Length: 249
Length: 249
Image (cartoon, rainbow over all chains, first blue to last red; front, side, top):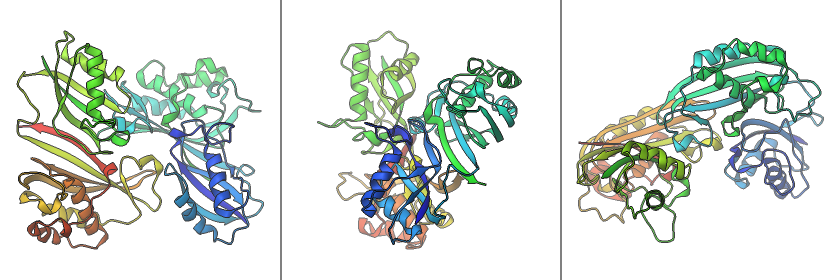
């Protein structure tokens, strides 16, 4: 049978999702733990990769197995064997030909920023820390220009091999809450049909430029039109990014 | 001059605050970093210790130094040299005879619990994870019995050497918020004039028994009267505990 599971992980200790020689990755850990558990050679297929240090709450992955264990119980057996920084949130049987990268999906990412005079060490691994005060209203205004179908070439790392840089963003919003001990926690939430290499981190870096006042919200339009990575802001650090959820259409 | 500072730390990687042969502790790190920075032998005096794995947001410590660096600047010089899991939140000059353990203080602790079917790995280091649903209203009701001056012997680890087990709690409350990706985050907040060894963690473990329905809120009174550690609940794990703040009277 083919089993679909949702995987959450703290990416701090991993070289991202994808198998890499000589590096510890999420994919490698899942393959190893599943193969040991079911005593067969198992390879997971992930819906997408994440980079080194990026976190996930809702990565979707499938694998094929001959086990007789009910699919819904597999999450418990796996969670007993996986390291604590990887958790299987759900597991269920799916169609034998269902492939997480062969069907259209909406993907949601969160990028989190803690703004405080001195960062609280408890949040340093899961949010980007800044001493600057960010104007969240300006950032949210700027984010609205990203919604819709656009060529996001300016928001894509130059070493990307994507065939087309056109993507559609369905949602983009910036909100903020005061968190005890963390100062202001700002969350950039983006939902789209696909994301280019480093796209969310470049969006976050650019919105931060707007937040501190070095860019105007309207400049986002100009940056999109320029199709030039140099016009956008810096790539924000990996630790702030979490792949939040998938919705398959 | 004598300098007073507020220290925040992620206790995950440390064997607590206090110097210990052969173990990495917060006190040792601060002594080493300060001695290197000012090229003199510096020993900090902390307002209190924390155990292995316990976090802090507001530990207060003092040290004496001959430096001419303005006391308010010392925090920046230290933060550049300290590991990222220790942060100096403030530094200021204080009276040469001011000692953080020789004056009355109110101390506030937070104990945090994430209640979710599967714990999110992002919160595993800073909150105790439970699959059980906890009745927060019952827990808060139970907590009210702890307020006031009591003999807290039942809430003290038996290997404590405290001269008296009488302490005063000024505040005790249990609240809860839904946090995206974390499920329900329950915070036990206690403020008192002093705490016995493991007292907050035993309070947390006992309130959780009330929360799952294994104890009645009113039982707290009986437990206090019993002066017997065996009558209270288990000691909750260290990772949920944060020393939040000091107020010197």
